[in-house]
Length: 358
Image 1 (cartoon, helix red, strand yellow):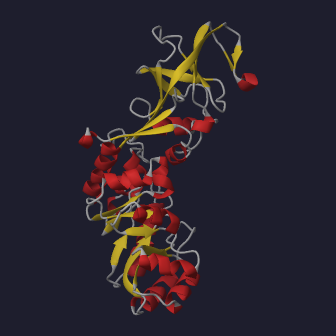
Image 2 (cartoon, helix red, strand yellow):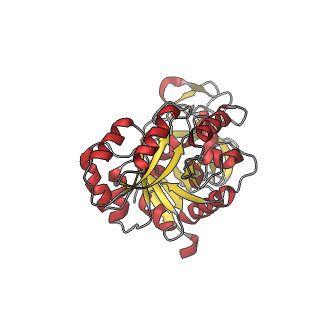
């Protein structure tokens, strides 16, 4: 019998969330499925919206080739572009789109011998200061690329640093910088990530790049959202212990029982992707009933409070996050974000479901 830690992936929910992103933004949408679709399985997710998606976005060539080998024929954008000139021949052969974000990439692209021209997404640094050309460099770079035989088409893009903070003006400042620098150039544009799709109507343009919202996590933590969770991480209780008031549980004695209590030991730990930094009180659900984490998360196990769940038994299902427990709440309790939690789910068994195929 296999270990009971399971990540249940609902592909119908992924498809639903892609449709929500398109409806909210309008225009065309590249589904961001880098990092193995944030831990959800890039090939499975791509196939769930194959024939419907306007395209996909991944981090690098290796990720794109996995999709091509799986038969995905839609456009695929390399968000970091190429790292070496030697990649260009494979990029052309596999019919991939590239982000160009630095002068060294421009020089390589303009001097390369390629079998056919490439579609380029030219990235501006409008205020995140990670990668991208400055607004001063941007127009000259656009003009050089636009008239060169190695370039078939240009899409102008930038990326927001603080779009999940709707009380900050930084996003509006980035939009203004981008619009001023690109005025009159006439190419298609792409600005909005998930947070901008949900919170910044000023960022609407030709293309959007939904990422975390595809997996059901709202970066704005809206009260009313149409998004559906895609991953439900569950395991089972493998032991039940009666803990006396004043006794401690787990490594480091960081939790001491305030009263006589019942604790369940769950077959899930940080090796399965549950964050070690999650604190006592982090919500969980046992057989659908709300409860909490107690004590320190260890590599393979953790403690759940069963004191007020009298019918819990060995084998009772524990939801770590998903349908009942918000992944955003768990992430906040652990001092991180949903992106990291999803990407860390590696040892848990993955089971795929698609309501359209049931």
